[in-house]
Amino acid sequence: EAVKNIEARDEKVKAYLTVDEEGARAAARRLDDRLASGGERGLLFGLPVGIKDNIVTEGLRTTCASQFLSNFNPVYDATVVKKLNAADAVTLGKMNMDEFAMGGSNENSSFYPTRNPWDLDRVPGGSSGGSAAAVAAGEAYFTLGSDTGGSIRQPASYCGVVGLKPTYGLVSRFGLVAFASSLDQIGPITKNVEDSAYVLQAIAGYDAMDSTSAKVEVPDYLSNLTGDVKGLRIAVPKEYLGEGVDPQVKERVLEALKTLEGMGAVWEEVSLPHTEYAVATYYLLASSEASSNLARFDGVRYGVRADNPENLLDLYHQSRTQGFGPEVKRRIMLGTYALSSGYYDAYYLKAQKVRTLIKRDFDQVFEKYDVIIGPTAPTTAFKLGAQVDDPLTMYLNDILTIPVSLAGVPAISIPCGFAEGLPVGLQIIGKPFDEAQVLRVAHAFE
Ligand code: GLN
Image 1 (tube, rainbow, N blue to C red):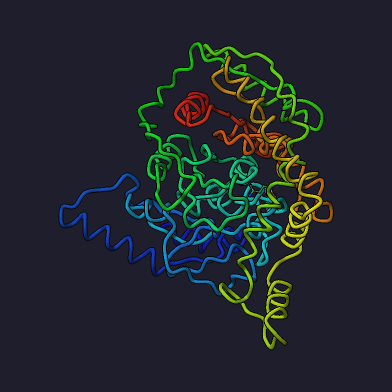
Image 2: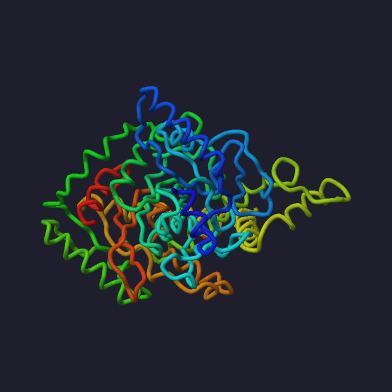
């Protein structure tokens, strides 16, 4: 069924980079056999899943949507993939994305852009655009995305589906191709909140293979979906409903708050005063980390190697020149500059300090409130091509998701109505490791 849907719809949506029909059928047969012989059903038994193409899958091509890795077949599974397999999910294939997860529209994929199923002339968001579009179009039951500055939540918002970015450290990053290691998190993209809780249950938890994995107890997320939000204290940052936010998006969010109020929650306006510095801070830190992480792509160890190099240096040079797209090069240059001696103190170190201030904004609000609510993105999905020549405008799409990433706290984007026929996303942000609360509120609202 799932494979048929891909065949019927993906020609238009282009959410997949690789479809593993054979592998999926073999996995489904194994599950059938087990059932026939009286075996148990795992938590995600038989559910067809699509994996973002920066999460490695053994023997299944993993490209990060980059020409550099167009021939790369990993020799192991990421921890999350192992966990999905253990829960009996069936992998359908690998999802399109912005190259190395750098971007917010899928237009930075070096293969082809994914389209928004609600309007094929519009972007699905990014960088997990293929993952979000596939769920919206029914081309996978659920998918995994990765979120460094908004890459799960923003495409979920644009495509009208549910996207959860867990607390930094809750889900193992082992086998996720690193973009900015201090920010990257893997999370589920699903049709509804209950499914999100199921998938998180399956993938969360300590992993010795990831040195930043947190040693925390994983609660029972499902039993938390009570529908009750009585007495819930909601903070609404004034910076999240101010300048630059589309009036219709703002209206939908205020309506959502009214609905929650009707269910017994209370909300108040608060301030996260360092919000205005978040985008600049993020682009310095994320690019710095990327310039270091992407140094491993040298034409020797991974992926494509340039033909006829003159010497070793030329091999590096040519392989990187040919392998990386323009946005990736832009970030490597920015990051290398920010980390270079003489500039390190002025840019990288300064950005680290501002990151602490941004984190402190959240800590202070969470002393008095249970969750923070606002829009996921300032606008709905924009037209393909509308922002490609203007990286700065593109960067500002993430102004409401980036602060959350810098603070390392969990947040979910859920659909909250439409503006001119396009889905609007509501962002619910929680305390560190309080995914249970975030899911409970999201589920009650849904
Ligand atoms: N759009 C943001 C960027 O380009 C976020 C990407 C992400 O979360 N991976 O960096």
